[in-house]
Image (spheres, rainbow, N blue to C red):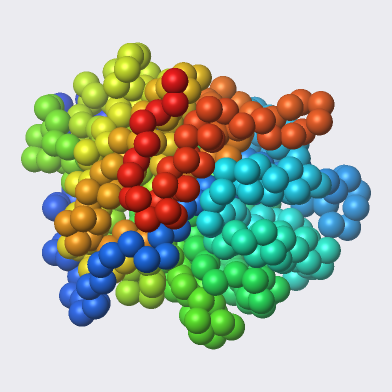
Length: 452
C-alpha cells in the first residue's frame, strides 16, 4: 500500500521554521507541462479488471532457515534489526500457504490478482539465484491462471536485497548501488521468462515515487536520509532508468505483455501557510516526476489512490488526530470525488488507459469499508461514463497484514486470518466486493448498496 505516514510530525516540524524564515529548501516550481503524446483514446467497459493487490514482505513468511544457502536478508530486515521498524514475523504465511490466499480470491470472485516477487528471495546473494523460489513464483502464476484469475506480477515492492546496502557509504545504497542496475536486469529477465507462460501483466515497480520520498526526504526508509534532495533526484532518475530497462525486457521476452506503472497519487490541494506554493509544488513533483520519466513505456498508467490532503503544515500536523466518519483509522481524509479528479488529471496528462492499482481503507468498521468501496467505485464508473479509459480497480488488500511502520495495527483486509488454521476468513466487505463483481459481470454496471 501507500508509503507510511508517521513521518508527518518529523517532516513538518522541521519544515515550518524553514518556511517561515523564507528558506527555500526545495525550490521546485510548478510541474512541467504534460508530456507530448499521440496515444489513441479508447473508451468503454470491455475486459474490466476486478482485482486485489498484495505484496511479498507484507504477506510472505521467509520459509528459509538461517545458514541455508538460500537464506535472504532484505534492507527492511536491517531496519527491523536496528529497531527502526516493527517486527514482520511470518506475516500471513503466503509463501508456504499460497493456496489459502487462492481459495479466498476464488470465493471473492476477482478476475485479477496483483502480487509481488521478493527480489532478495530470488537472489539472496549477488549472482546466486534460488531456483526453487523462481519456480515457486511461476507456480503461483500458474495456479492463478488455472483458477481463472489473471496474475499481475509486480517485480519490486519497496524492498531490496540487503547486499545492495553499502554500510560505509549510504549514498551508494539500493537504487544507487553500483551493482543495482546490472543485477536488476538479470533478475527481471529471469523472472519474466519464468512467469511469461502464465502472466500477461507486469508492473516493474510499486510506488517508486513514494519510496524515494520516504527514503531520501523523510528519512524513515533505507537509506534513511533526511532532506537529501540530491539523493532524491538521483534515486528518482535511477529508479526510472531501471523501470525502463524492465519494460524493455518484458517486451523482449513477451511482446504481447502489458506494462503498467504503479505510482502513489494522493490528490493534493493548496493549503494555508504555504508561501509561493512551496509545499504544494513539492508534493506534486513527488506525485509525477517519476511517472513523467516512464509513462511512454507503459501500456497502462496504474496508480494507487487512498486520500486527499491539503499541502500545508496545519493539515499535516493534525493528521494523526483526525477521527470520525470522514477519516480512516490512520487519519486519512476519505474523499471519493478526488479519485475522479485524479483519473481526469492523469488521463489528460498522459492520454493512456488507466487502472486503479490500489484503493482501500484502514478501519474496523465493516459498514464504513463497504461505503468506502462503493463510493470510490462509483467515481470510477462516473469517469468511465464521461469517456475516460479506466481498465481496472484493485482493492488493498486481501487480508489484514503488516503495514510497514504501522506494523499489524491498521486493518485494510477484506478478510482476517485464523491464527491456527491460517484460513482467510471473509469479512462482510469481501461479500460486498463479490456482489459488485458479479453485478458488473452480469452487465448491470450497478454498484450495490453496502450490506447491513
